[in-house]
Length: 109
Length: 114
Image (cartoon, rainbow over all chains, first blue to last red; front, side, top):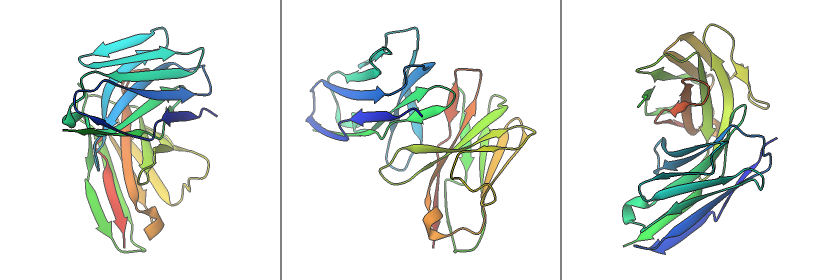
């Protein structure tokens, strides 16, 4: 069964810093990988979707990479802002969505 | 983008009662919808896959008689928590599949059982 791990579980950074969130998975036979943002008590907001044939995707200050062979993905956030504070979830997409445990990010003004 | 709604957004009920949660795809048809449960500070766990016009497929450990799923149309799936108990209190999120690679998630429903 696919297992998805996210490190760190929580992260606190001062505003303006660049940061990297990590996601690792055990089974490299995946279709896609998707990063989501979840605000407290809310649903999921899709950030980036990386197809298995791709190595990275970019959207604004966000860049996500995918290395299927090593079972890793990273989400890079440039010039962090307080509004980026949320929980970030990665989901590995095979025959279903397998979600990681999330990284709770706090950006301090 | 595609929109998925859930109703209600939150519900409080007494132990022993049943609660129905609706999941709707507003601007596309979804033959497949999914129901997830999320406990505080934990990730989403797939409960069941809802297929239009047929029985739902439940994940291991999920009681199908307790969590009744109906997918009567291409835009609506319902999850009914029967005889709810406090341990059923959780955040329930649905998603709807549009095409082979796309799933869109609802805003979630917070269930609190007293």
